Image 1 (tube, rainbow, N blue to C red):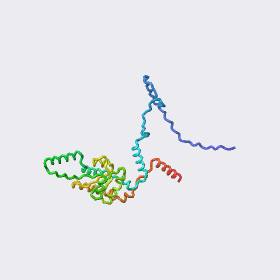
Image 2: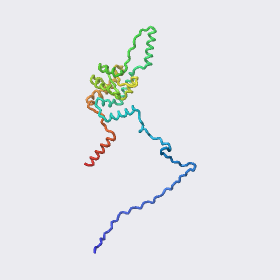
Image 3: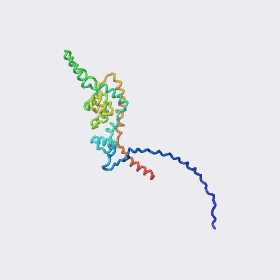
Length: 264
């Protein structure tokens, strides 16, 4: 006869009883008998569909599509250093000081020119000697004018816009400025340069003549600009841009990397 093992049973901890759930009294909604509930049916040919955000499905104009495709391509493709240098613009603080100086040398408006010529004609009518007025120091604009000034080493500071399209118009200008030892800088927004030159947009500007009162301000700017652009020539030549993947491709690569890491 097999004897049964008589072992003491393991006693577990007693779990405390759950507290009595206090039911919240339900508030009965008072239904107004005057207003009948009529649920909408959004089936075909039924109620009018609600307004939705359809911007994802809009057929955008061609120029907008081209802008967006260009922006995507510029982040995906490898950008060579001569083109990539236009992505590095002058810092905000220095740019503010630069545009403060440039505003003093804006060309005269049509109204100002008209008044000047009127005053000169009035003097001539009075029998005074017609002496041509001396040209005030103003900024020079236009790619051909500035190229000539740089080649003759007459430009004291050259300002180039970073968003010129086609970029080939100003692509050679930084290299030319470095060769001729003329201080140059790249700033954001061709429209901002255009505002200074009283035009819609402007590819580049140059300061050739300047008043003695603003000489110290210009020297400070030239020193800052030379440090950031002219003296960094070798570094700029080596720095490629672009070649960043999109979110889908990045996620795909990350998934593969994660799987490889698991296997190891």
